[in-house]
Amino acid sequence: MKPLTALLLLACTLAAGARAAELTVTAKTGKGEAVPDAVVSLVPLDDIQPLPAPAAGPAQEIVQQNQEFSPFVTVVQAGATVRFPNRDTVQHHVYSLSKAKKFELPLYNPGAEESFVFDVPGVVTLGCNIHDWMLAYLVVVPTPWFAKCDAAGAARVTAPAGRYRLTVWHPRLAAPLAEEITLAHGAPLRREFVLTLKPDRRIRRGPEGKNSGYR
Image (cartoon, rainbow, N blue to C red; front, side):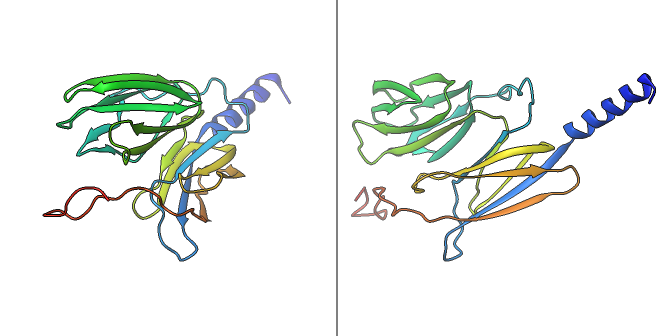
């Protein structure tokens, strides 16, 4: 094979490998119920260097409002900035003791807004020292290819064709689920996971009205 022909063939092969492929994940319980808030991430097993940096644009927000964190689960790529605006009418004391990121926002006033860079992969559990029922999770992943399952328990990720470690995380799973997959351009892959969830121990808000509040 002539050198020029070989170079052209190599270039075409590399270009084909970089073409986008699609993965759809569905998360359900053993009873067939949808599992929202499951986090799906793809870590490449092939050498993809450098990995794309966190997407530019407005930082993700985890808001304190109505004495709750919103959203309950947030997922970002390592190196991303997350804002913590207090849009409530009361003070909060936001903190995390998680290995991936320890921080504290004591006596955090209404209207205040702080931000942090989360550069270590892992799960950051958020709480409030004033309102014990407040709970949220920030999942920091070492990859730009991730998604969170919607209310129907579905998530879609588009990534370059190749081999990946697919991981599914949920706060009520005893441990994340993981498997190796191969994505190919023009051949969308679908995976369905049946999750065995631990009981939900969150404190729930009572009905609005005379007995409204938390219980």
